Image (cartoon, rainbow, N blue to C red; front, side, top):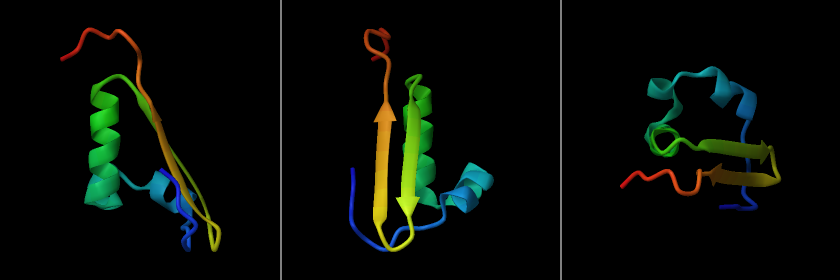
Length: 62
């Protein structure tokens, strides 16, 4: 997912625990981690934000 919005300081977001990140980011991070994946957030002020995740193939989880 990517946008060209105002962006934000990712170092501030990464320093917070999930309970202080905001419901959307915390929920995305938790769901991806539950499946054994990783969530990546890249954002630059005044340039936008990119959110990507990776999930393992064939994990056998349903």
